[in-house]
Amino acid sequence: MSGVVAFLAALLSISPAASNAVKAVWPFGGGDESGSWSELRIERPVALTDGQPRRVSIGAQSELVRSTVPQVDFTVRNEGEGRIPLGRVKVEVTDSQRITACEQPQGDEGGIPVNRSFFVDLPELPAPEERVVLRQLHQEVLPERAARFRLYFRSLAGAFAADLFAVNISLVGSEAGQRLEVGRFLLSLPGSVAGGAFLPESTASLEAAAEFHSLPASTWCFRRNRAVIHSFLSLHGERAPSMAALSKVKPPPGWDRLADHRSAAASVGPLLRSGDFFLGPALALFAAHQAGDRSLLAATRRRAIAILRRSVEGSLDGQAPVEPEYAVADARLLRELSPSSSTGHLVARTEAALRESEATVEG
Image (tube, rainbow, N blue to C red):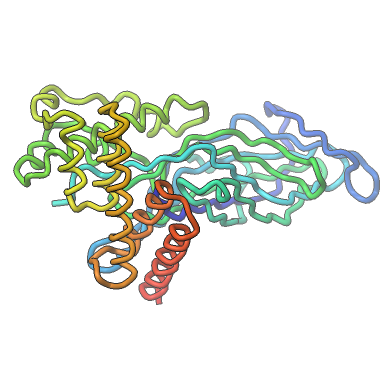
């Protein structure tokens, strides 16, 4: 599916050791050049917390969301006599999904201090070659001292979507085979996923959708979001309080009565014709899958590819009123549905256009 740029920052500091930490051992053979031994440990627990996103307007409609949530905060401690060089932070994306808004708009600082930041480009819903991201640290943990890292995930996304990640995070030493697992985490970017626009917490959105003749899209958007979130929360990993709370969101009384009652198969055509580019094709594909008809799914896939290609090429040629951020989303979904050098080139072009729009606004 689409890609939206996401970032990781790590903050590092040095402090005397504490005696009551729960730890996992990483033998670090050999130590420094003096031959002294070293042993690096991760102190538990590792904290995953929520925060607040920051938004910057771009153009007349879309927003650039530079988020500093969620935050992964952990401490490593050197229990040996030699310095331990930390080479890189490794982030491996093992799963990623995008959910879309279904209605249109009408940590604690105690203990060891934090003082350095590192940024890593972490693409959401990445292509296979983008799933492992490494960031150079060039830091050392001094003997009998601790280093605290705070990992900030930031993303480039509009208010219309949120991206879910399952990631494995580890520290990589300067020598082959030196690796320390930090943990596995379930994240949402650019910020915490709340109900309302993404999940059916009330019937107000469906009532408004019926008034504006967009009930099929809103109905299937909520259905798809619920299915994606339910599947994602079944994965193993630490999760922030806001994400854990998503499992408790239930459709309100009366939701089924107000929802569009067309069958999944009958909903595919209206969804493809909705004109919502990424949203329309994504929902049509979900409905076709729910219908359980392989020929319908294959036909829907072909039509979705054609719609997305027209959207992306029209945006790049200036013939379609598609914001750069949405064009990136369309291009990444297109590449997922039809992987090739051609669609990969379209992803690169839309992302370059987005960077250019950022530079124009920030300049």
